Image (cartoon, rainbow, N blue to C red; front, side, top):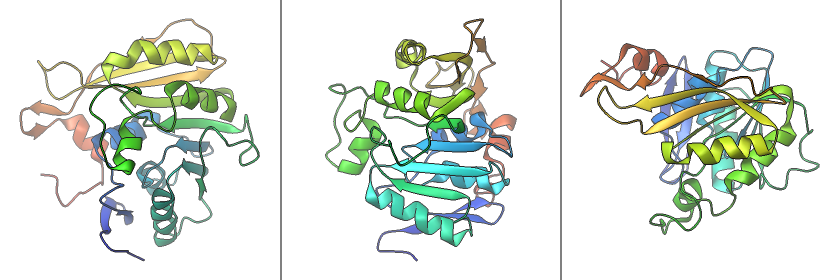
Length: 248
């Protein structure tokens, strides 16, 4: 099951995930899984799934009904495929090794209740570029742009379906403009701070396909720590059963 350099990480609730030096996950991923909160009957899709942490975290609580997980990297798809088998989720998680810009004929358009994406944070041509391909694709818009991601999400979603993603605050205006360009109306926004007194380092946003522009609700900031070095009560709840052995 495991290949050279790979190892298992506990997700809690009996779930485990196979990760590698090229494909792992962090707090941003866990926050997006928490923020998106699929319903039990939802058909969901993750674009750029990586090792597949979000579908596996969702499945820990037996939701949603079905997940399509898309990634352009073969190694990432292999990791999630094997994790799905390990966790007996082959009938719940469909893994697509595909370019998210080329899903025509591989998925049914307008059939998903929820689409999520933890996109590259850096626009093409900005920031230091990682020489390692897997990390470069995860952090920079090399294989796809923000516009590509939102365009595909809009095609996947049914009417009133939800699109959730996380990004750096400096790209908030880009996100809102691009969502509206493809008829996804921003409805919820939440900033994430390390602790009180620190500027937000991340935001989580939800839009609805075909939604009316009748107001964006900004939720209270999510604090990672109540004070330096001590997780907040909400963050402990966000982690839930994840890595329970490592949390105080």
